[in-house]
Image (cartoon, rainbow, N blue to C red):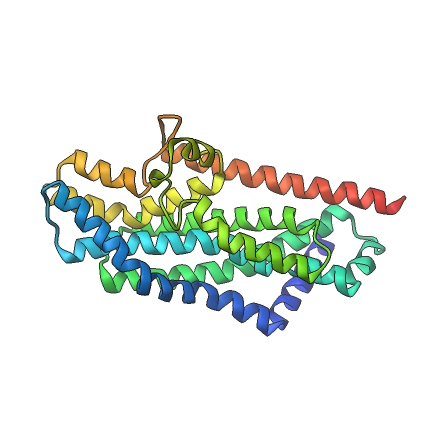
Amino acid sequence: MTGLGALIRRDMKLYFKDKGMFFSSLITPILLLVLYTTFLKKVFDDSFRSALEAAGATVADSVLNGVVGGQLISSLLAVSCVTVAFCSNLLMIKDKTSGARHDLTISPVRSSTMAMGYYLASLLSTLIITFTAAAVCLGYLACVGWYLTAGDVLGLLLDVFLLTMFGTALSSCINFWLTTDGQASAVGTIVSAGYGFICGAYMPISNFGTGLQRVLSFLPGTYGTSLLRNHAMGGAFAEMEKLGFPGEVVKAIRDSVDCNLYFFDHQVSGTQMYLILVGSILLLVGLYVVINRIAGRRGAR
């Protein structure tokens, strides 16, 4: 444990020492929030209004802002928890390019310990960013329409924590194979551009075709996005029901924004979503450690 602690401190110190890497990671979620509220808010707003008008219902602006705001912040956090993890995990690649990884491998530190050092250091660094982003998002929601309970806030923070663990584990497994800064930049660009679509953050997967919906239902990130949606928007939906909205209308809206997810026509419960997300984290972390141990043994021969 002493060796692991030293590796974690060393990796975090190097991460925060690189001011460019740290501030770019920190500003990314804030910039996304500005872009989302500037360009996407009106799109989501018009979409909800047209859906309600088609159902012959009207809703107060504060409730509508709470629904739209919840969708915006859940989308932002779902993407940031993964994309920021790829940025904070670049130290693993920098150690390869600088030769520091070679120095560490010839030290009496086990490869599995080194692997967990990288993972935990990246996780802690990313959590600082994602929890900061969550605080800013909750502040935004308080300004536009707050309907969250204390349980919703705690649930949202738990979702952020688990999704950050998932993003860090995923980036660790992928970044392990990268050996140059160019490769890291290319992978980061692909993840930033594509992950938001396949996890349902940019566009709900209910808008996709049936075949694609079934494919995406196998991806753990989809369920992480849905959990964030439920905790960020659940209070506003509850307010709609208090105002007399028919249950089928609220259910249709929840289906349209992926609060309700279906695996081959079977609705996935919140408990099942958590089990899928936690299971994928354990699987990815275990795979990452195994890969490092195998690579360490080969390097020792």
